[in-house]
Length: 450
Ligand code: HEM
Image 1 (cartoon, rainbow, N blue to C red):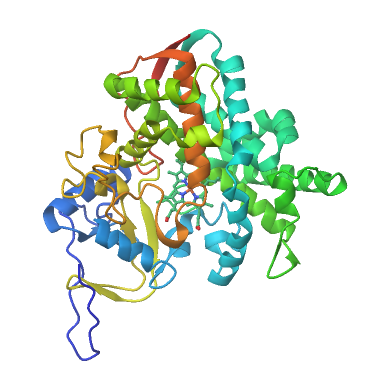
Image 2: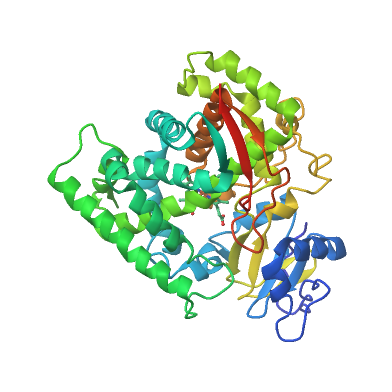
């Protein structure tokens, strides 16, 4: 990869080559909305790691491969703007929040948020209890469920409990999940949110309802602070800029965003992890053996024991590689730049696409094969920086990665230790189009308690 700087009198480099196909006026937009990865794979096959796709409104440039990902993540908040990348989400969230805010404000907010997520011990117990509750009250002794439909409420209940506290989860958990679903349907990475579509209108109404639930909880907790403090209590008492109280408006918008950022992604990743394990019995047997050895009959879910589940870790990583739930990252281009002899103009969009990059044979051996042991220390196929990027990279790498991995591990370990499970739909497909790539229903399993 080369990124030369050119002196002003040198001739301007050409723009990146455009993928074949496309129609007058709409370019590749329709095909892209139907199956983005097909267009991107074609672009890579035709032109290599740098090429463009005509999405109508803006020039979209794709960068494929570890070196290019490094450039993309390193230049975020410099040549690239994450805020401009996700402009279509602006209507759902507050403009002054996290990466939508200006850089200094974002950095101050992250100083408050990151410590809340650093101590995994505070989440282990509540996650175990939520999965126990799920087994007791949703699964029972035996039956059939659709993986995506069942994991949706489970993941949301974990989030409600972790971020808003036990009482909120108990009293408002079910309502929160329902409104949250309408809110989440407002997310669209292609269509502008000002279009008068019913899904956008319903999303805005749901947003107001969730905001008022969070405001009520803040008032309640200010009147009756919880001791010992949970995450919510700590968060509303936080200060930033060296002592200023965190404005309530900000608390509300961050707590609207965080469960959203972690919902479809965690549901999808957990669903695919289970599906792939059930499709690969040999590897499943290894995971089962490790679970018995480490957790034992008594099922001791301490943080220390969970860390020892390496075989399960590799299964979760292999799912990240083959089925990255967040499958496409976007940035707006703030300044013209040159790359590999092409010039990309200010105002374009730049994309990185883990779904395609994780299947490059020059990076991962036999990439279409499910093979979690590729991540064992003797092979370490993800040793090249920015080769495995299912949780992003650089400054904006997923803030909830440890939370999500812990949750997925606990769900997997509990289900596999307590049930014999068969996959009924043998070959579930990912959701079509540009939405989060969770397994599309039907993706049913049958289970029987051991
Ligand atoms: C399997 C589950 C998850 C996946 C695959 C995932 C993936 C990602 C990715 C790829 C990004 C960066 C996007 C970009 O660079 O454009 C991101 C950012 C983020 N994620 Fe996650 N995420 C997951 C779960 C969670 C959870 C559970 C939380 C919260 C507890 C969370 C909170 C965040 C936040 C706050 C950001 C923005 C970070 C920043 O701008 O600095 N995520 N996530």
